[in-house]
Length: 230
Image 1 (cartoon, helix red, strand yellow):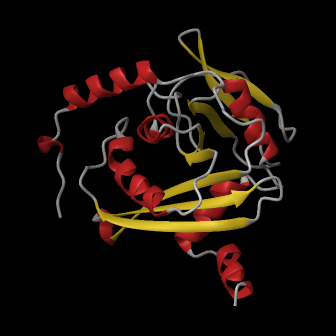
Image 2 (tube, rainbow, N blue to C red):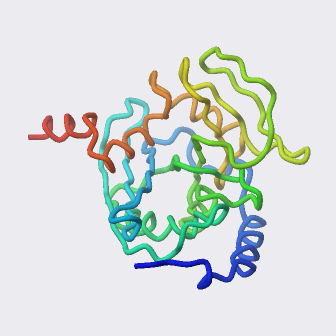
C-alpha cells in the first residue's frame, strides 16, 4: 500500500484541527476525586507502515498493576505527514478502546496534547473523540521553547509558545532526555503535570505508557506478566 500526500487535503485537515482545538476543555472537569483506573496508549506500525498497531494498557491506581490490555491492528489509511499524525493514529486507538471491558477514568497518551502548532496533538484529538480526560506525554518537543531544565529528577519548567503556556518539560529520570507534558482534554495543565509525576516509578516513562509500550513490543515486562498469569 502506498500512501501519498496527493490524496490529502491539507487545508481541510488544518481547518479540522483548528476547529477541534477550540473545543478542547483545558480545565479540570473530572467527575472523580482520584481515578481508580488509568490507561496508557502506544501506537506503532508494522509491515513497512501498512498496518497501524495500537495498544492500550489499563492499570489500577494507586498500585499501578496491569488490569487489562487490548491491541488493535488496522490497515494504515493516512500517510506520514508531520503535524497531522493524529489522523494517522487515532483510528487504531479508537478500535482498541472499543475492545476494552474496563473503561479508564484517565488516559495517558504517548504523544502531544495541546503542545502542537495548532493545539491539537493526538492526546487532544483522542480525548475529544472519546470525551475522556487525557494527558499527552511526548518524548520530543514539537513546538515551543523553555528555560534550561535542572537535571534533578522531578524538576520541571513551563513550555511556552508565543507567550502561551502549552505544557511543561519534566525531568522524569536521571541522565535521560526530558518528557514534554501537555493537557489533552478535560484537564488543566498543572493537574496533568501532577498526575504524570505521581505515575513515575523510577523509569523515564510513566507507568501507563511504559506498560502500553511493553505490550505493543512484547518486551520482558509484559512477557513476565504473561507468565505470571499462567
